[in-house]
Length: 202
Image 1 (cartoon, rainbow, N blue to C red):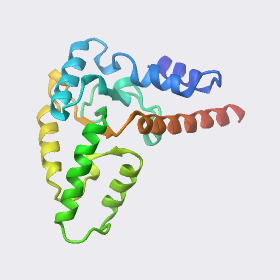
Image 2 (image 1 turned 90 degrees about the vertical axis):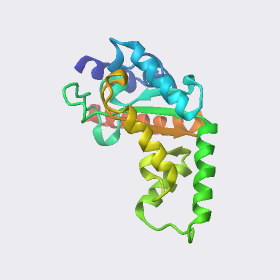
Image 3 (image 1 turned 60 degrees about the vertical axis):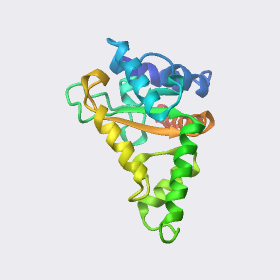
């Protein structure tokens, strides 16, 4: 895994390599590291999610340490996938679909209209709106008492930690369209590239 991390750092540091190409080749394309010995589990997981969200399985893919074998998240940068502790490393999936996104958008709007007041009440709701403004939904930031949360978490409890889907907790974020997904990852990789460049100068 040290070699994989070193390779990723090298291609990222090389200015000749376009960030979008790095995202497409390394983050989106290919069989995830966690399923390198059993591709069928990846297919079954995508099929299960596709049925729940009612989207094409081609709109669903894995990101994070389960995909790469190591993390590129700012708070966990370069942390390797923990094979021994299945509670430490989630399987992070992404759905890119305006259909799925808009379904929750409309549902949450209807929920808000039925509740008393529409002002931002707590930090969690502010965080939800921040992600929403940037074109993606995180279920852990859903408004309190929103009934869609129960349906979501009941489903993911039913498939998490099952060996047929990788034996780990499964989490999903929904992006409204490819633009928002690419923007988030492009900004993250540009930041990592700049940091790597600064390290080289020291």
